[in-house]
Structures are given as structure tokens and as C-alpha cells.
Amino acid sequence: MTKPSQADEALDAPPETFEDLGLGRGLLRTIQGLGWKQPTPIQTQAIPLILGGHDLIGVAQTGTGKTGAFLLPIIEQLGEPIPHIRALVLEPTRELALQVDKALGEMLADSPLTHAIVYGGAPIGPQRLALKHGVDLLVATPGRLLDLMGQMMIYWRDLRFLVLDEADRMLDMGFMPDIERILRRLPMARQTLLFTATMPPEIARIGRDHMLEPEEVTIGFNRSIAEGITEWLYPVRADQKTALLLALLDELHIESGIIFCAMKTGADRVGEALRKRGHTVGILHSDRSQEERERTLQRFRDGEIPLLVATDVASRGLDITSITHIINHDVPRAPDDYIHRAGRTARADAKGDAITLVSPEEERSLAAVERLLERRFERSVLADFPYRGDPLGRPSRGAARKPPPSRRGGGKRRGRHHGPGHTRNR
Ligand code: AMP
Image 1: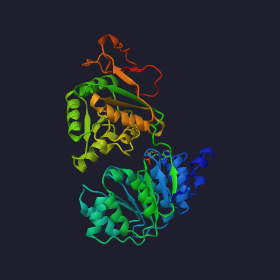
Image 2: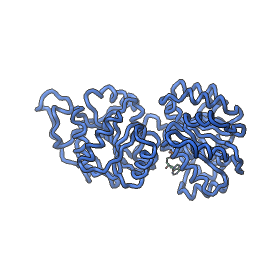
Image 3: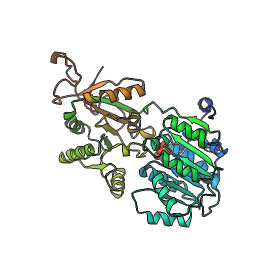
Image 4: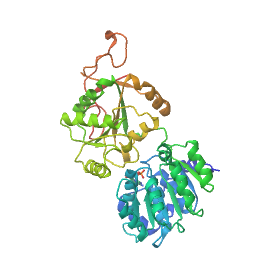
């Protein structure tokens, strides 16, 4: 059974420092080197519980600092290196696995502890070799880990920590049978940490069946969009979406933005339309080879490519701090993907815009997003765009409001980026 959350007490507590959380000197130096001044709420709550040996369910989105919340106390407890895996972190996608492995590399910069990563879509040979040599911490995607477990003996007897990260995402992607198979092979005497953005019954069941009296910590990001994000909704006919997108991009001069499409074919099509218009874009979806995806992401991170056109493969967890704009070319079909997508911008207190194009056919998906967020969006009209029909669905032309001038660069916006030139219909 799950114990009650400690979040309420923590809300009134004075802000803690990393020193207060029980981490040792070595890691405190590392944290300082990372430039982290204060623990985030999930870190404040989770780190002492994990150091105290508890199983933990963390209900938190990416962007909350949850990676540090589980990696730091695990590293703290591992001590000296041994050539057997003692911590396993399971991630749903290779992008997330790579990101966690990178964070791990930074946190282990001054430590003799070793780590490795195994994920699908890359040659298995070098991954097998890394495991043969033995590492302290392993980051893995479930499918590839099972392949490797089928091909070679992995010595699990020293495993002390298992992290199931983005558990609801693993569920969505159909990984639960794989997870169960992996869990059956791992020693029982371990600490299990599960992180999830939502709590569907299947995830609660893992808590009951595979964890020991887990503590639960909830960071209230579940239904909310970060404060720095301004949201815009543009109703438009489906056949005019890409044209509207191009018109918006002409207004916005985006330095770093992701355009989300529902389908891979859509992403290819939109990407091509943007290229034809002279934009430099990268396209990211699961039909692209692993190498190509990594290269594209890196170029995007480095600022060489200002625009990324992606399917939801890119929406969860990718940690790129400078993204100023998210554009949903299509309304996400799973409502919580709206939150995940919007969460790619305005990270770490920055500002950002989340822009969604909605066609009449997508109104139901939009209503689901609004139900999840427990609020309605205001609707906007792009000034001077040659709409076919009234975008706001009003009966006669006479009723249409003349769009006011662009707000570009003006108004109350803060930061370098600016909002779309448009009006909101109140
Ligand atoms: P995560 O939710 O783990 O993906 O973390 C999101 C971003 O926040 C990453 O870029 C982290 O490096 C950063 N971060 C995590 N913890 C802190 C902290 N205590 N202070 C500042 N940045 C942090």
C-alpha cells in the first residue's frame, strides 16, 4: 500500500539546501559544478527518502529535476566501484536513455563509478562488451536489455536499485510485458523507484506487486503548464494548416522551436514545405535511423537547426533548455501529450510560447485537452491570413472581428522571443 504524501508538509517548509538533504561532500561539489543552487521540490522530497532506503513512487513530469532526484541518492549510496551492475535505470525511449546517461556522466565526473547504456537501434556488439566488463550503473531501454539478457549472462545478484522512469510512457508504448519479464529476473532485495507523470491503474499495480511499502511524492505539475509558457490556439481548416504555420513562422523568426505533427508522414510533409520556403529544419520521428535522429538532435541543441519537425517521439523528456516555441501542427490525440509537448519550452524558469493549430475535425481532441487542464483556451486569429471561411466558425462575415495589429516585439512580453502576431478572441 502507498503511504500518504509528504508533499503537504514540504510546502510549508523553508527552502532546503542540498547540504540539508544528506548528500556527501563529493556529490555536493559535483552539484556545485553543475551550477545547481537549490534542490527542486522533487529533489527535496525524494532524496532523503531514497537515502533512507525507501521504495518510492514519484509522480512528476520531466523538467522537474527528477533525474537528479533519483541519480544523486543512488550514486551517494554506491560507494566504491565493483564490476557488477548495482543500479538499473529503465527508460522508454533511446532519447531519454541517452539523456539520463549524459546526466549520469556529468554526475560521475569525479567518481570512480562506471556506467553504461544499452538501447535498441544501435549495434549490440559494443553494448554487450560494455556489460561484459561490468559497470556500476546501467541505463537501458527494455527491449534491448531483454535481448542482451537472452544473449548473455548478466549478473544481477548485486543489484540494489531499480528505477522505472516515465512508467506511464512505458505503459503507453506497450512495454509492460517486457518490464514484467525483466522484473522477474531481478533480485527481490532491492530498492525500487518509479517515476510517472500520471497514475493509471496498471502503474498503481506495479507499486502494489513489485514494490515494498512505497512512499509517494507528488509534484503538482500534473495538469498544469509551466508559468512562463504563453499558450495560443489558432482554429483553421485542415487544408490550410501548413499555410498558416508558414505565415506564423514568417511573423515569429524562431531561433529554437519544435513543430509537432500527429503522423510521421505529416512530419515529413510539413518539414519539406518548410524547407521549400527556405527554413532550415530537422525532421525527427521513429522511421529515421538512430544515427540520423541523434545527429539531428545534436544539431538542434547546438543551434545549427532552429526548427525541428517531430512526432511525439521527441515530446517527452527531451531536455533542451533554450527552446522558445512549441507549435502543435496537430492537436495531440492523447491529451497529456499536450502537457509533455508544451513542457519542452520555458524550462528552468525561461519564457516560451506554445501554439496549437486546431481544425474542426480535431475539436474533440482539443476538448479532451481542455478537460485535462480544467480550463478553456482562448482562440486567436492571425492578422491578414487569407482564411477560407471564418476560423472562429461564426455564422456571417459581418460578425467577424477585424484582427488587431501584430504584437510582435511589443506588449508585456518578456525575454527575447515574442508572441505571434495575432489577436485572441475573448
Ligand atoms: P529533469 O526533470 O531531470 O529532466 O531536469 C530538467 C532540467 O533541470 C535539467 O536540465 C537539469 O539539469 C536541471 N536541473 C535539475 N535539478 C536542478 C536544480 N536543482 N537546479 C537547477 N537545475 C536543475
